[in-house]
Length: 189
Image 1 (spheres, one colour):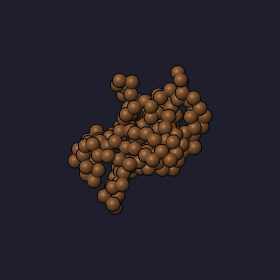
Image 2 (tube, one colour):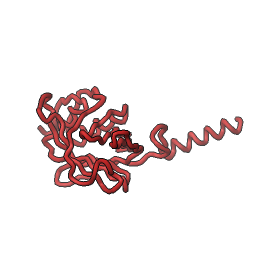
Image 3 (tube, helix red, strand yellow):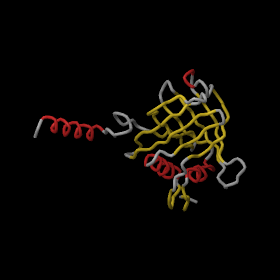
Image 4 (spheres, helix red, strand yellow):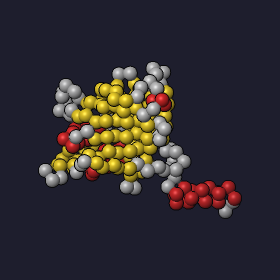
């Protein structure tokens, strides 16, 4: 085997051994659950951050959770927050949320974007680098789709993490529906 081919083989084996994932940064970072008072919060590492022309910010938050890549893209803009599906990792996110929430999904057809209205609780969305940004977000406020939910979204650029904080377990099914999940059953219901 020539040196070039052997080097690529060694790099490939090394990347597999340490969990390197193409297109998602050099090495995998862990996403983690935090639980308190029966609420489930998901902490996702920020893989990419960019400033938008309107003064808003976009982040791609992704990591590995229980062996599965999970993540999404989030746009913080003057009108609110938008979640964007980011392919297989967002499918993984919806599956992980369903499992954590004890909800069985019969299928997921990801929505390309989920628009959320936001209320700033701490920080300045135009300057998230000045400190942690804490938002309370609302989906389907007029209940036109029967998917109303509230969720806290925290952006901490000092620690390079995005936190999806659950507000109330009663919103779990609607959070999943908001991403495009079809709820089949709730465990224990």
